[in-house]
Image 1 (cartoon, rainbow, N blue to C red):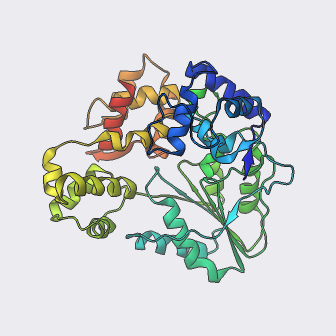
Image 2: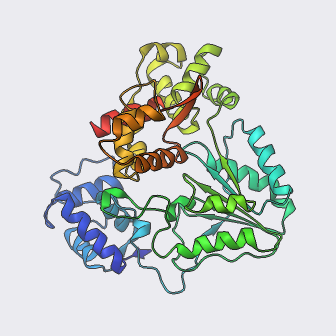
Image 3: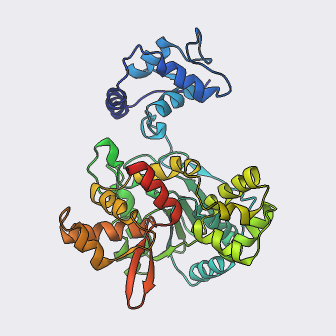
Length: 404
């Protein structure tokens, strides 16, 4: 059975997380919660035995940094609210990149315009292309379809998912000749989780991953016949200088016409007005729309009109996802999100500065505004000759519940 153990850094992170949890080492809740993760169909509270592999001795071995079964290791990390991939000890011969095949995307709606634009850019010689956007907007799906369309243009294609496994630090990738390289989830090596006390800025490279920034510089500033595609929830610091040298930043918006196909796939009943209202309510986010479609089926017999007439958003379905995004914002960004969540109409830049100047300096507020916009956590709309900044309804409701 595969096993995992904590790295030295992982040991320190786990120690701190355990203290913040407030449970004693011998508290059975560690074992009950881990068992619930591994076998959710059983009530483990006050159980005399736990899920296979889960025991007090295994828990203590985990805390000492000894090897334990990988499934139990991941469950303990989840109990602590930590990402196991960032805590494990890697062997000296670990591959710097986890290369896999282009993922199969069984359901893909719309995006014909986006595919045409990006394909044309690569065929015109673009060497570095970054697809950005909020979680669930379809970056991975678009990159996979794009890579499939471009395979014949290159001698080989390499897909590397940072979502599955973080790459090894201080070992940036190489750039083989006539190769299409796709790095899915580049934001996983950026910034830090502000809830764990890290001080790194959100778009700054994590410690040990600074050479990956140099790799991108080489992609743009050296002569070669390969292409690198990145997907990321936000662009790294300094990427604007690369765009000036020919790199392309492509912010991915929500579905419009493609949303009709998505809703039809779910066999929902709706008219044109209801389709537009639903898309606006969920920002055209395919993940949000799929989740909403399931709710509409379960509670409203597939009738979109009845769901919209209900006039509410079931935020509990979306909170776990949104809360993860909000962990990665700075204190000033949190203040800004709370303020924007006070109205659905949004605020102009001047109104934001006027109301928040007592909390932070103008420069910090503007930097937070820019950062949140680039993360697609806030959106803008033109109001006469001014820009208004606002939150999508789902984000707004989740911010109200999570921060108040």
